[in-house]
Image (cartoon, rainbow, N blue to C red; front, side, top):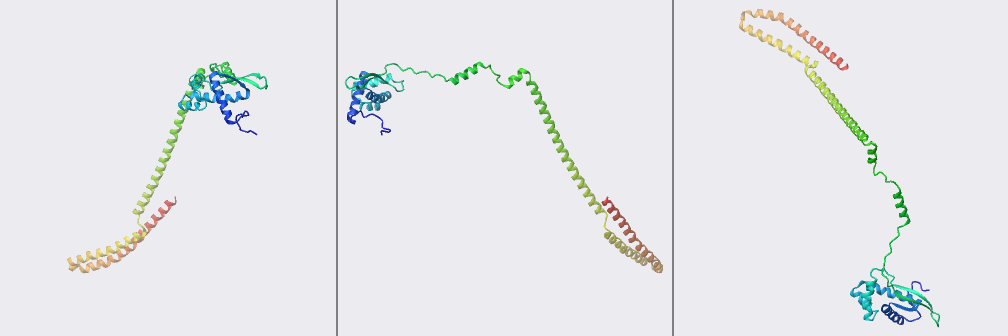
Length: 289
């Protein structure tokens, strides 16, 4: 099985086949047509078109590659000067095979292989049917309105939309202002409550500083009672020194005053304690209220 085996052996060895194609290619480029069997013509087409594409490059390297196969210098010159320029725009397919019939004698199929002489005219691509249908549908449809704004302007709705937008913006601004005022009021109320609490605390502190405790009141009364007899005794001593004859009178007066002073000293702490108790009761009742 000859899978992936390109080319035909033609019942000949490799050297013989190579030299045979070299001569056939040179004759084809010289005369531009040859008569041969079908199989040899098909194999010759592959080799000839290969060297025409090499000649289209026009470089020195391409010329040397073609010279290894085409040995005739005149044919090589014709290949690069005439044939390369003729097939410059043609993308392959430089030869044509025409079947002539059967050869007399061995009944082998004969065909004519020749180079194409016509100029290459690229065919225009036909537009697909789907594109034609789309173009026809677009042409048949009326021109649609470009945008919604243009249609709204035609109907006179653009002005109404602008007014509604303005009213919405105004309402949003009013809501924001209300929200801000509410926040400010809440902050002011919290501050006033804090100030009231601070003032109440100050008043309580001041009241406590002004109103002495019952213990302090008792201490003050005791100090007063102690200081009063001392002052009285000093005044009496001074008088006795100034008036020696009146000592007896002073003693009698002191003896009379001592019980009175004791009675007064006994009465004063009771009144003070009663006043303190009344004040404490009033404070407790105020706090409960």
